[in-house]
Length: 236
Image 1 (tube, helix red, strand yellow):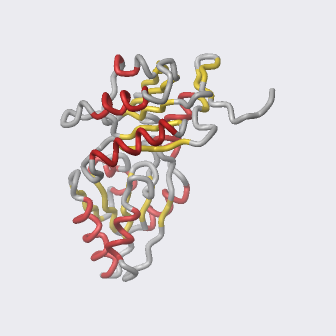
Image 2 (cartoon, rainbow, N blue to C red):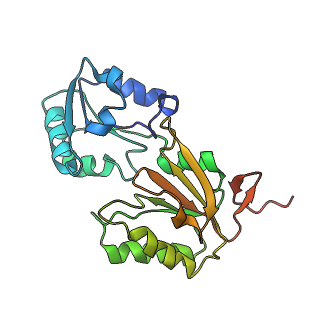
């Protein structure tokens, strides 16, 4: 099983995910994700691997499943969105059955905190270039901006790549107005949530890091009562 833990707080943890972990003999995951569920795994075999250990993690999980053990591989958010689901399916290659259990992803949690910014077509783009070539990443950013998509950015800034968010903003300003509403949510649903609503022109004046999800509106997005709203087209 590949299990989505949601954004981090127990209130958004689904019953299906809870049942999957409770029924597992072995729980496999990035150590930060395992630290979100210590009470659920204290009596279980656990396999923790560091960041960038995804391939080894997937192979170990499949090997354990081939031994006949009930294995749960955990991902934050939804495992099929920048998570472990695809990699597990590739490594398993049909050798063992794989069940994907969805979770609430960061973009959904952040959007709920900001209001209703995703009411029309949107694109989710990671600004991490560890697995995606930089030129393709920025090509996607500009294409989404040119298409007037609402754009949600994952992994927007780290110490190793502080300028990707700056370049992405410059590309979006070619197609979006400077006053386009932008929502910035840090630590969404993790107990220390910080929320800011600003504009595309001013967004870099606010804290943005790896724990942040940034949502840039489309040409119709506006701020209503302190919340972002993208009208879907209903006539009021």
